[in-house]
Image (cartoon, rainbow, N blue to C red; front, side):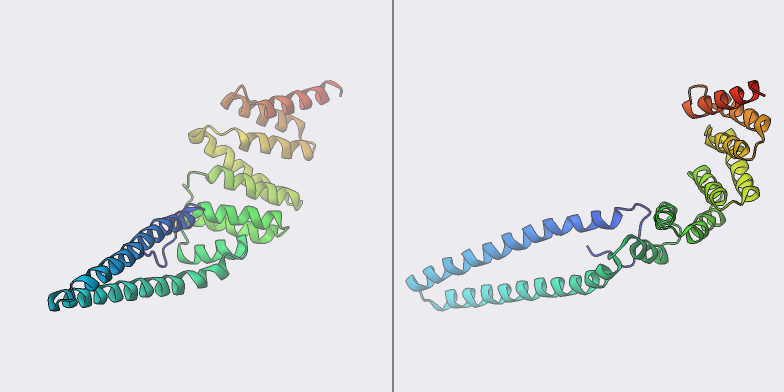
Length: 231
């Protein structure tokens, strides 16, 4: 089965489709092996009984072999024409992900991965656009808290603390339904960086209310508390 212009949300979906080609190759090899054995079997029989009916059977078998080979050739060439252009899109992660998203713009996992790749390459502005695209397409996506946190981190790194705070607050608001404490923790870290220690302490407390066992807000809370004690 050939899947053309179809892209799933999984990063490995397209690779999984190629696994089936191993089975096709095995079946083709078995079929050719069978035809080869049949050919020699009938040749031996023909040497013994060169009767007219047998000649017709041999000609029929030969025609079937030719048709089978033509069919396999068409399938091979057709598959090559479909797969080869895609190889150019697999030359690097960014090219592959952008080509896939052009086919399936709703593949948010791939868009998130693209944003991470762009961030690692130092292109924070392009990564920011991809994260914002996810929010605009599906603000209720299952990993939306992670997207808000990533956007907050990008703005924080660029020194835009106001925008960073907006996204961290959105991540914190989502914690009511997701139980994810990271939004409050990141908000507290931002407040620490700005010298807003009391607000930072409040954010860390809220993070620990969501998950009392979370080590990062515990450490941050203790750090801010010690700073306030020393004042």
